[in-house]
Amino acid sequence: MNGVLRLDQATIVLVEDDLQSRESLTLLLESEGAHVVAVADAEEGVEAALRLSPDAVVCDLELPCMDGFYMIQRLRDHEIRGDHAPAVAVALTGHTDDTYRLRSIGEGFQHFMTKPARPDELVELLHDAIDARAAG
Image 1 (spheres, rainbow, N blue to C red):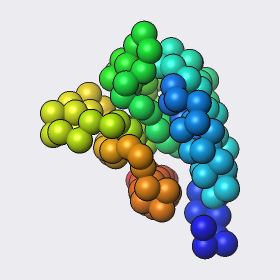
Image 2 (cartoon, rainbow, N blue to C red; image 1 turned 90 degrees about the vertical axis):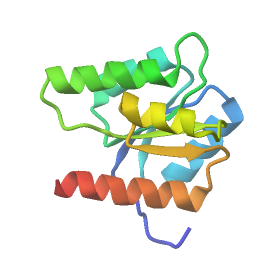
Image 3 (cartoon, one colour; image 1 turned 120 degrees about the horizontal axis):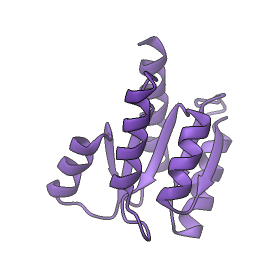
């Protein structure tokens, strides 16, 4: 983007069932220096997040079998029980109505973006939120 690796060394779990979106978001985040673990469903997302204790989780809300709300609830429960610092969590969805935004924040996501996510906005949001978490 601007030659500076804005997500340098950040570990990000990306949960997206659409292959094309998952691949393009992975390339974007890796091009900014992040280590990305990209998975296709909420169960894999939970497993990756519990194993890695990532800096951030970017998760689609509409997933097969279990949705992104399930994933964030499991992650937040694990963080609370283990006294771990909460990962930055960004909900991604094609839904633009306030119901999804409010529910995602209420369930444990700190940030909400509608699809398709604008690459510069997503990177900036993650950079700023991860920095704030580290300073925290």
